[in-house]
View 1: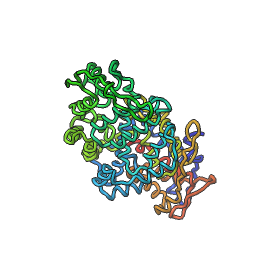
View 2 (view 1 turned 90 degrees about the vertical axis):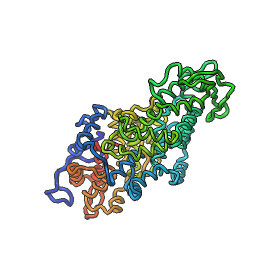
View 3 (view 1 turned 180 degrees about the vertical axis):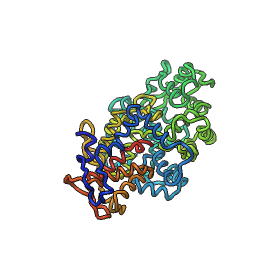
View 4 (view 1 turned 120 degrees about the horizontal axis):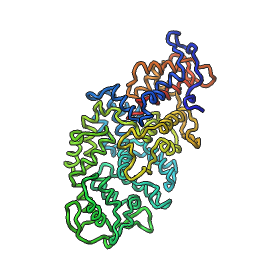
Length: 524
């Protein structure tokens, strides 16, 4: 079946139910879809890998000044989380922008007990990659600590390991151990994060630190530690790689427990060496200390943070407050994130919808926004089809889309996004294997009744307010309303609005589908 036909029935150009002839436009399926799905093709977003979509937004909305009002709360919860439902936005809005930031940063004050209970009820097997992925995706969907999960996702894309190289099935759970470490230390000092990731069994196996011996130091971890985790190219030499590898020897994976590693001093190279200008009998603690205090490191890691959370290609002035926070707080990443969220750049028009949503952001954002109930069993396959498989970045450099977000979008991943929204709203099977999404269908009648929605205009406004911050141009709103009220004589369920008029359920669902396939909704 044609994807574009799924949310609707064939065109009906007769007078709408309950609407005056003057308000009826005879909205066709093709015209309505031109608002969302086809409009991305029209502006060249798909063919240009998403670049045109960002350019279209910037040119049509400008980049001057700061965003304000309730828009800031929706912006904050997308950037520092995965989007939010109407009730969640209302809850954070009651705290004010500063209070909302404090709640996100001081996550310990927010109970996660309900999330843990729901996850345990899934009874997932953490030795199976698909169930590990389901566990984390549903944690993102259910969490009351969205920034903590967003930071965990950030670190996973920087301090990269993959379940495909952790020692086979016996080592799969090493990825869960690493994930829990990144969550527990997400806002710790970078020194402690680097110490922990060096000792991490998944990382040791992934970058061959477990193979490194005093006689034959393996250079893989030492090289990536400098190139991708701390300094970047141009700030170290090949000799530093060799000497760093020697200083990092001594680690062994436990033969009894695959989830543990041990540092064996007798297996460490006990020779004097020079690393980045520091000479002595250096071990892994010395290496981390030298790197964490290197002048290039704060610029390197703050650029990654800024790019991931705000916008790409930050200037030196953009990064300076974050670098200052790193140095003044003795390398505390919580202090850096506080500086980032309070920076003028974060709340600027330039930052507003500045990046394409990653597959995880898009998938979990829709799940959270619509407050869907389900197990999320199919979500790992969904994000994979969109181009992002968690616990399996494509290589040690992480996902290209984290650095340049337009890399997330091409014709195939765009169709996967459409299929996901379609399946989410219709409860239909999605993907090559026809897997169902495993969630209860949206109860539109309950939404209409609880929100006291009395007209199609109010219906569109309600969803646009928390899905698009209310930023829905009048002409787009008119198209959506006209689509909803266009008469549809096909048999099926209906939704009764407060004005006493019933509208076909497939039109009501189709209206929300169109809203969630708008170009604006693809941007974070």
